Image (cartoon, rainbow, N blue to C red):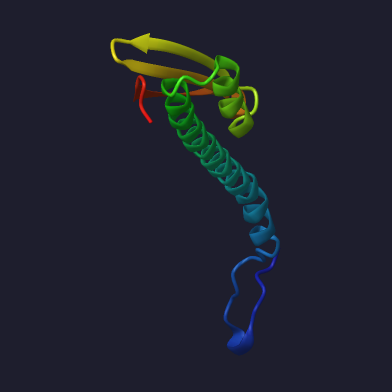
Length: 118
């Protein structure tokens, strides 16, 4: 095979047309995977924050003497599929909740409030 010549009779490098497409085809799945993991991490963190906020509100409700069904309902309304546990520790009423997150992981949160609080 004879080397191609350009202007001035100099030899040009072999043709590498299509190499950009091949490199892009290799890089695109990696970029998509990193993007999907980032979105999943943000969704899990958002669910954790919502669960923590709901548990704190539920602990205050329980400390005021609200019914357990209302306390559980407050958490489940904020984070669907959450499981709630209410317990007393000395002068505190504590609420612990767990909920499923992405990829089979679970997030949990706990909050306490002074019993009899307003």
